[in-house]
Length: 216
Length: 216
Image 1 (cartoon, helix red, strand yellow):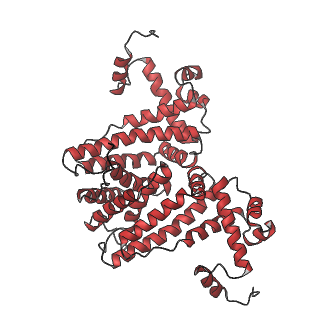
Image 2: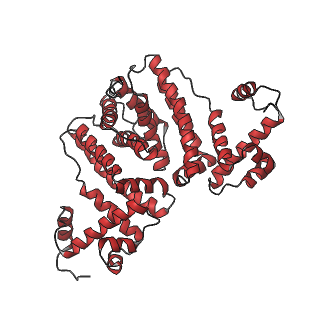
Image 3: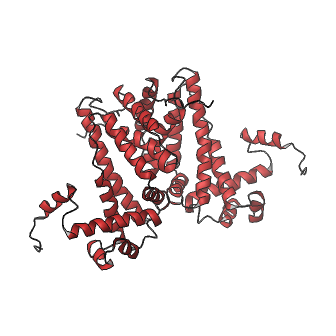
């Protein structure tokens, strides 16, 4: 239980600050996670083999299994790490922040790895492990996006009673429909017009739901 | 080439007017297509067997194969027929028409067959036949929805330079994200707020893209 001298919380906070250059252990983690990400883009989830991740990263298979006992954990960790590398934007306006997030996702989806991951989300959702991983990822990015909208509301850019979920569903639903569902391109003009339409409608007070009846 | 005495165009127009009670041939078509629809909802595309459609409809397998030589053609015809049963709404306003289309899709997705079809779209997209069928269906409903928006523009409900594709992506992207992607419920209040937000933004002139440079 107490095998490590550094307190876990201190280690964790160092890592979330992006300190990857640290010790050998962190270099190993980083090499394994990027190799996993690349393999995922190359072959998808079902065909991904930990052997190939070991070969690509130069880290022994037993070392990988010691830290991530299942393929699902390894893949989830790799996608989480790739997500965390992109710090949430802070452009000063909600419009700017949303546009930065959307265009970041668009650019990511155009890399070879990104294309592989989009294909995995399109075609491997029948696999309960893929579904669970994709749900966890979705929940995390949703949290980040929700915080951007709430910061915009706090700055007075949208009415206080705006429905944050609806605003996010509209913007990211449209982008997802084009990018993942139909496999089409998303230009910056298109993304900006989508965001402007939803923000203008929300500023006009349309993006709110009737209050749910209060519990007694 | 000339085996039938009725001109094909006359027969076709009778059929699209919904005259299904006609001859025995039309009753057979109708029985086979609804049996296919139900089987699809029950087992999905990959596991669907024409034998089971024959048993459920009481129509011989050879008769089915004579009219629809492949499973893909049979399933595509059945989904097309189910779609055509729902005439496009004409409520007098764009908001009313869009709400009717959205809630029609929501109600359809809640029937046992609809749930089966949503599951097929979620989990069988790796199958190129499913992908082709779903693309054809999407193109057809897109055409219907586009016509509703254009009628609203003609009535002066939206600016003439509105981007119809963007308006449809925003509304149906949000609904699809909840219903298919996340498997959540869509209430009428939610659908109405989504439509109102997009229409208010579009009325404010935000839903347009910069004009593409003209070809010389």
